[in-house]
Length: 305
Image (cartoon, rainbow, N blue to C red; front, side, top):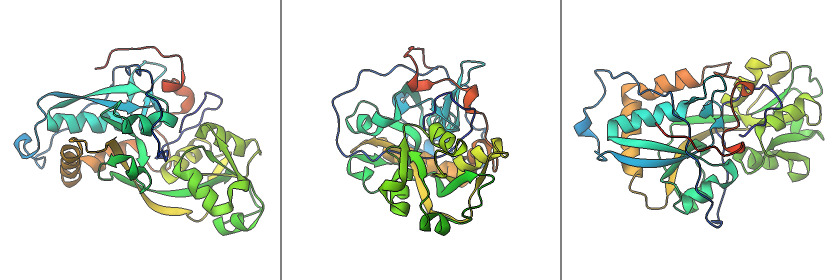
């Protein structure tokens, strides 16, 4: 999910870390830059505010990477934070009368930090799994993704997932994600090369240090759309229908209200409009060379909106 600036690639996906133990409390995370996100335009179908819980202007701390296209990132040209998470939470809080306060934290400690109560919630395209439910509560899912293989455009040694599995090819992925778990299920741990971030995993395929990368389909489409001369999606699906959701500390009183807002947004079409904006088929909204390092650069506290 987190990419050094070594390549100008684009990705959108939803990936996550299976954390069962809570590490020692992390230092306070810096605030995210002001977001450019705007609530969705109200429609006649949107429910009245009185039909949803009123959180009374409550501030909600949200763990976020600011380095995960298209969910959350900082534009280098403007210094502004934007992405699906910013738009979605702006709209959710508009309906619930709350204020999201975004705090940057690296992915590898995010789930454990939320489980420890260091944040009210996290928004980072997190796959809902039974293992993660042991340590955190999830919202209802807001999008479903399939896992696919991305390969070099001139790859002719295999043409399907089954052919890849049957060979002795190397599979790249990111550490601590459901993509890693699915990769191990597919080919065994010995054939998986795990990287700290997806940008490095994709670069390994381009440079022929790996033969394929396993990735959520929305992210894979983004990579292929921007690098059509280098990459393509392999025929077939590794796994399908994985849902992404927000996470909360166990027993959080925010799960119900946020689920209610998501339900209303799904029913009135707002959620679909957000998906259409941030997950355009076959392309990505911005390239990784156009965004800052987010939680992976030097911490520079900045005011929240």
